[in-house]
Image (cartoon, rainbow, N blue to C red; front, side, top):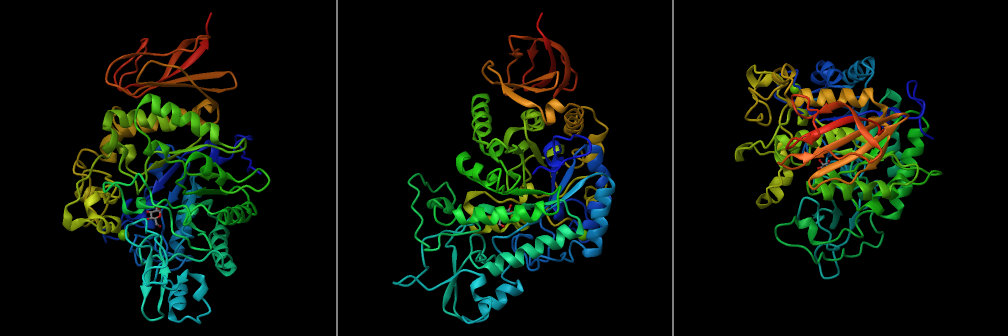
Length: 536
Ligand code: GLC
Ligand code: MG
């Protein structure tokens, strides 16, 4: 079932490797329109090689009106002119492969753009051949939307269409109508889109909001959430019991997997936000597997303290099916920046954590520079999530700002003012500057990625959580004869380095500090990796 690999016969590339998410609008502009593009990404591939990642996941590059910046797809089998064209895509893919990297595309099956020809045909009349490709319902008996479902971006999940006198469902923006996956033609058309890219040679897909794709056929009201407060999003007013995570969606997920397995060596990653028990079901079974990696966002969501992290890791590991490979995500184009959340010192610890846990890490562009909070002046806000619920401060622009490459005008990202502002400290916090500074976040990421590559214990070894003092998270990674201890000080006081009773320190392998430390104490905010020897 698992694709074999020439270097490590027991593990596939997506198990050993590290995934790096590129938000194409903000990586590198090549044509001077202030928006990143495919040719820009191609120009920067050597940066990724030097960084030491293995696979690149691109957020959507398809033709799109950009109501949700590409997550509103108007054609699944082409490239938006903002980003380039299919020939440019083929060049990029060849350049990625020439460097031994893999390329993962974003696949958005839950909804299309309202400007996709399928939806235009669907909304044209009630008798349209594609009417049933989307989810149309009559008003509730007393008038108004068919049920109480709420869009993830706030407001009702139903939009009235006066011309045909029905509502259509949209789990996100009204410009993103939900497809009807109960109609087999939809699945057939979407699998064709997957084949289009797999035939071109892409190495896999990250599947957008996979747990959303099927809804309860009876469309009952969702239960109200008793814990809701006005500080929470509108979406959280209800529990998405009937609008997400339906049993039928798992069969579709298994079909995606069967299709990908027909090619061999591909990876499917599912975007899934659910508690562990329901999350783990998206692996499927050994006989009928689903996605290889249901994305695990718990490092983004859980409180940052040793006891909480320890419990999170233990419970996640325990929830995995026997054949399920773990994974950890540290940042994304949707989440606040890790350095904004934790501060720079703990962001360094977080880097060591995500790169030494068991399971495939996914890094997000710019986190390797420690980009923190980026204030977005009101007139430059672009994210539709902000405009739907401005009072909540959940705009995602602050995590989507352009990569600062150097100290030249517009940080080497573009020849013109970029579509979103740069991080205010870009003249200092940029790739060129950090590349030459051993104390920088970038240098730390490179060291850690190098260690992960050099030590199978870190990439594919077993994981053993240790007891430790307050504020210290510690675990061992083991492969073959090698035993590595990872100890992370999440606090601002020095702490004793915990040691398993049967082991002694052999040597320090890595530290988040600039000057390697070897003493028996962890400095404040220090993460350290040591090789263990058997105690005499
Ligand atoms: C996913 C994407 C997010 C997008 C949403 C709707 O959560 O990561 O950016 O807005 O799906 O497609
Ligand atoms: Mg451009």
